[in-house]
Length: 283
Image 1 (cartoon, one colour):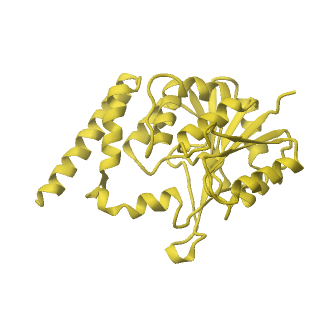
Image 2 (cartoon, rainbow, N blue to C red):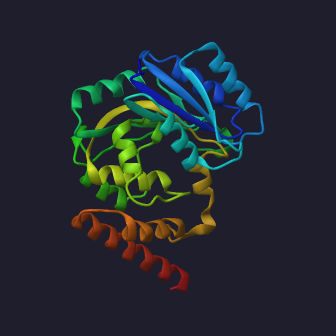
Image 3 (tube, rainbow, N blue to C red):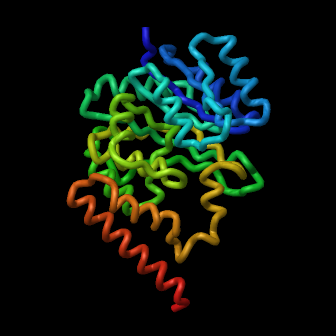
């Protein structure tokens, strides 16, 4: 019998944190899950940690790319999602943690919401784990959106306008069939904003559910994706990331969006490029 929820952890040289991430899945109140551990070409002891976990729990499976090389997060998540058997799907980075009640709460929402809701987004604690980086713990919120069922296109337009309004993968539970259908619809974007591109495809097609509860912890440390993005200050012009502008140009050309969303995207791109030109001119 297939599990209700598939959790996919992709890791690359993740020995420092992988055992904690696995432990947070095994500690779930919800028991009907499988865990797929996808090795993205690691050269440390993390593959051995993954195999040891699989040896002690039949719900855990280990995967790797056939050539054993590093193919990046997008390719590794695809490998995991395609091998998953659960009705629902969650991606957990190897350095993040799930709250004990996370899968139970999100699965219950999708069970009750019906097929018109493609995913549930819960809140995340951005955990100031690395004291050397400074800062403090901060919980995300979906305000000004109200909790509950939300029109996907409305959230899509907000995501286009505000780069910071992105729900974390570790607090997102997808209907696996809807996720794969959106992922495979049209071209994909690889690298920075890969998550955003896929989320935009999902929001363009279906509604989602906003759950104003903190159900995961995103560990902030020197190698975390958020910290690397913040550290790339030399790639920003007056608060406008050149990477984001490149992504928005791609999205305008390739994503199948409704007219209103396309207009919001075009206007956001126009303003961003204007600010970048103004900053570059030294005016």
